Length: 325
Image (cartoon, rainbow, N blue to C red; front, side):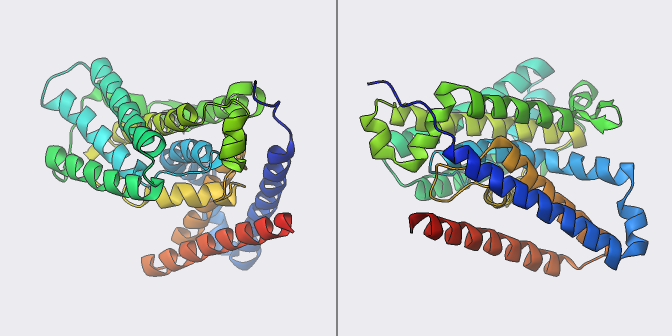
């Protein structure tokens, strides 16, 4: 039996949540303008906007992969550590092993995809819970990154740095890469029959299986794509700062999950869009930028961002209960 044609319900919910998040973002910016007119002069500049989107590119790439997994009813806690490991391995291959930049980058991306696929095999075939699996591999990836790179590998080749530092229209390459990936993810999720199957997988895995959807293969593919994007994010960040840090990805997996939930994903699966993930990352990045401009202490920044995560999960839970009733 062929899988059922994708219906519009997952996208309608996602779009509704996207609209609400966009409204919240606008309200937050307006309140900042009214409450802090002096700081607004520093906030409302093109240079500050370019800085915000440049800094959000790393988590944005991770969020796109995480959104695909969450639509399919799962998640990956190892992506931050994997991004660090791939960046360090790529840097080591260029600086210590003397590999040409294209070969080192291709190897790093392949390593990310293979590591993600390994997560998918354990989850889909061995059927170990995704939380346990990715917590375990997070420790493995972090350890490998520290063993190979120590605190980090610096002074990477200029030709590699240009991949992350080149600009067009005042915005660095990682921003444009994120835009292209987001557009591709939107087209795949909204307009291709194959990727729309992830909505059914997340909504009801058993029904998806009975409908002829290859559940295990989709899960493994989702984790492999997540790993590929994590590796790409690690490489792009290393190129932008010309340094492969062993700890750059610490905590980034939670930021990606937060952004996805804010953007319309559900912990129960079956909901979400690529633009929702992007809006969620943008909202968090703008909030962090406002806190930095106001020179809010790092401790309070953590408290505020943690409260945003709890609020997002609470709203998601309330909406799920409402739909169930």
